[in-house]
Amino acid sequence: MGKEIKSALEIAMEKVEKLGEATEEERLRWKYLPEGEKLATRYLKQDINLLAELGKYEEKARSYVAQGAQEILIRNIDLPRNEAARRSNKKAMDGLKVLKNDKVSVENVYSRIRRIFEHYAEQGEQQRRQAYESLKAEVEARIEQALRQQLGPLAGVRIDVESQPQFQEEWRRVLAQLDAQYIKLLDEYKHELAAIP
Picture 1 (tube, rainbow, N blue to C red):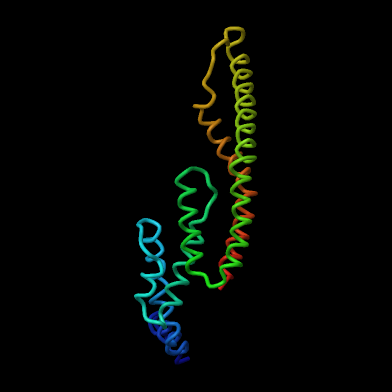
Picture 2: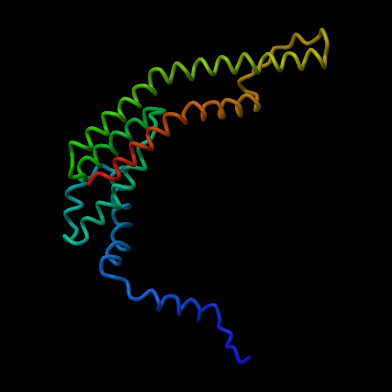
């Protein structure tokens, strides 16, 4: 019955002791992955030379810095919803190509990504316009019917459907559905990019 009751700190310390000492590789990873993430963020915001900045790190750390930077650059590739997104995509993709060793594989994935971007900009834009007009007409009809039921024949009032919260909410939902197919494919290609050395 003389069981010893341990504090949470004692239990945690025992678990840490069981884990053992961190390897040099683990320590390098913990230190330099965040450095690479910061480098990529700086690269995206400023006009810096990624290779020159990477060259400032010692040989053992360089691969971890590059890995951290690649993760951020890949995360920053997104659908070209506007001009700023297009510029950000180009910069992230240019930076990744500099950091990756297998340039041919990177370019193969990029050509598929560019096709998605082109489709999104051309046919996708047309789909979004059609969906917008269709939703607008549908919501307009629902509102007019509701007004006729409430006000009777006096319901000749015109309502700006596009400014209605209900319309805005439904449009965001429709837009998310339309973008989902592109995002799914883009995510697959981003996973492929991440696996390229």
